[in-house]
Length: 149
Image (cartoon, rainbow, N blue to C red; front, side, top):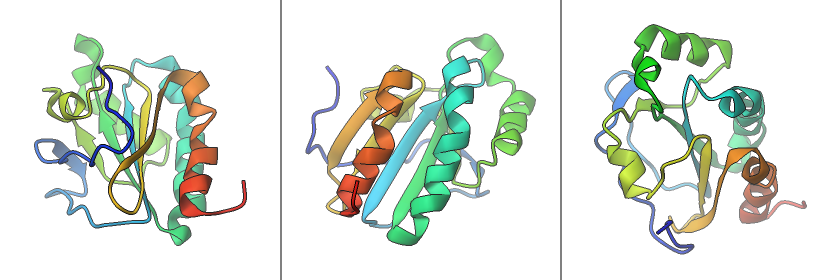
């Protein structure tokens, strides 16, 4: 069963953080975007430039973004490929490896790409997967931030 709206944001502990080295400390924020992706996912690659653009566009409004690499197949655990994607797609947000699916299980997620938006109270305000779901992400970020849509 997918995570319900209003559910508190699960812990991000258990990921192997590629950046920043040593892990992250999750701070309360007006909006938190959790993004699951995989190197073998074509849709992930198509949406990644816009994920990075949204990260940059709304950071000054309080958006914090975390990306988790969730492998779909054996080739997805190739660290060189993951690092190439991070560089290619300008992923400056914290990036964690979730190769043991610890984070995905807490989020009740099995999809890539998948997007979870949490409000200032740390409650799930929106979740979506795939390209059709991604089309609604920016509008929901703007809604939760209280910006004109």
